[in-house]
Length: 121
Length: 113
Image (cartoon, rainbow over all chains, first blue to last red; front, side, top):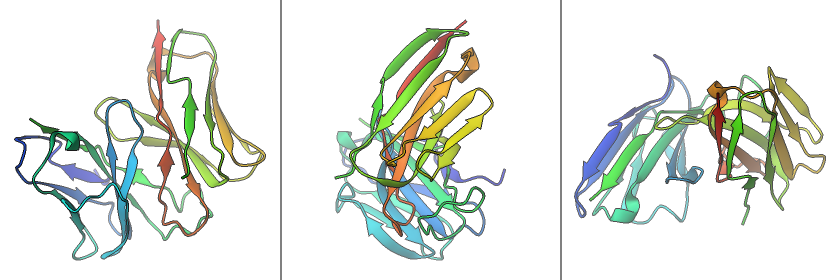
């Protein structure tokens, strides 16, 4: 399978613990995105990388959240001191080319992974 | 703040019926995408529309982008139980936004046999 891969798929953690999610994008995709989705809502943008550079962070990404993409390939999203409000599905996505604002059918599609479910108890 | 509003939020219909889902915004989007999401899975892209007034067809699904690029609709003809799922619209506003998408809250579709 050469799609976007995320793990773990499910994580249950106690409040106050740290958790880390990993995302392996489609090979050679230079853009990588993190989104968060809660039940009954659409995904919300968190942050994105162009290669190893983190180019934008949403205000949703509090200082307890940190994302890295050290070698421009896989990425990690760490949540420190988890809170019950952090319970959500964390989605990773990647795209093959820099998004120029002019989508091309085969060129600038964003591909989502299957998500990592986090439950904080 | 750019917002996308989808309607209806829930839709339960019988197999064979037609339906339309709407996606509206007060902002102009440079492109708009429709996704389908199954429970516990990530969204899967159905279509991207970029030109005002554009209409795209994907088998029984017809997608339209409004002339002013502020709204879009998804029409499904003769719905089947396999169409059941969460339908999401997502827009990119402006250019050089890095592919950052604003999603609507989704339309939960249930098609009963």
